[in-house]
Image (cartoon, rainbow over all chains, first blue to last red; front, side):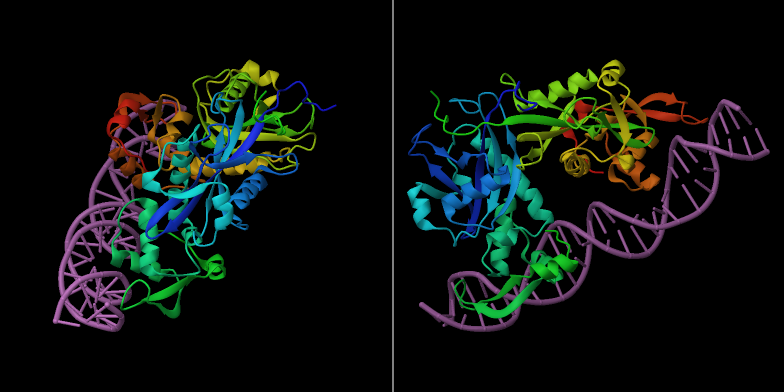
Length: 224
Length: 224
DNA sequence: TCAAAAGTGTTAAGTTTACACCCATGA
DNA sequence: TCATGGGTGTAAACTTAACACTTTTGA
């Protein structure tokens, strides 16, 4: 007999705000629900926490179920616990955001879940408090991305400086000065020129760079 | 019959990191537990979420139970959901921090709970993951206090500039330059000179100031 | 040859930091 | 009269912001 048996227990779920970056835009991976409750409406990917997993593990599992991706950067947004946030039954939900390389996900799984990448500035209304979760996740992402080198997690291994700048412009929702931006990046010696040229974005071609995590851990500070 | 009945349910609790400021030091209100589990050890004040209250409401209730204080600034830290964080039974806990004016609390209630104000840099080891909660709360407080005028919530209505500086030194854990600090504050026109003098801190006396919330909301930005 | 993206420095403005002395008062 | 905390300004270092032209190349 536990100490706590006098107290009520609750369903606890996790909801994942999955950020991707493609062609200069941030997108979210959203479900067009073909299941109850709220069938036919848009929502975040979520799932119930199970007995044998931490809430962090639940978030990773839910992300993997939808995308096939493991070892993905995730950060907790916060817990949402209004009485009526889920009109069906009371559920306390913990929101997490994930940063994925949008080229890597498992298209079959995503299709099976009836999920789509939706551009940040074309988001539909979502069920429950999912809009609020997204808004707060974005705020946290902006905050964190400005002081920690997590933006690279949205990019492929190798990227051009123009792509990197487009990424940060998309995250902050404002345009940045090209020369000032490149000056900043030049000071980060953990952003290394690979030596190869990417010709897909322009005739002239642009130098490819790579984020060296080890070098960053040793010495780096980050600010963009 | 709900949609979710196949899923497990969990005890959900809230734990409160209660910050106060007194004589140049930040303190936390901690319980020396005279109840199970972990009787005899230090812990945060906590409580189980009930059926009829949101998690935010639960946090407010728990704070009020211990201090008698209502309408207090609280901010969620995050949800803690490791499998074994509570060695008794599985409990998912949501941590909140509160900023209280340390002169205002109900001493009877605090005594009844066997709680004490403990200086931040003399914290005992606490049960479960409460140390981790405090560390994260402090990090969030520092972050937030540097960009939003929440520090005033730790002070009485009227305060001297020296007190205000001591507060921010305590929050950041570093000393600040007096002249630079006062230059900053002078630019905040929502920090108003009351016109009266506080003679308790020095023979000469120091001008009293007040934070004008309305004026801040209209126009203000904050950065310290 | 020209359109399109890549790449490159300088200057002014603003912000941050460092620093030391006089003032008013009660004991 | 003196010990104590209150109050005040300036200059140097650094950071941020604004700004425009040349290069390369494939079509």
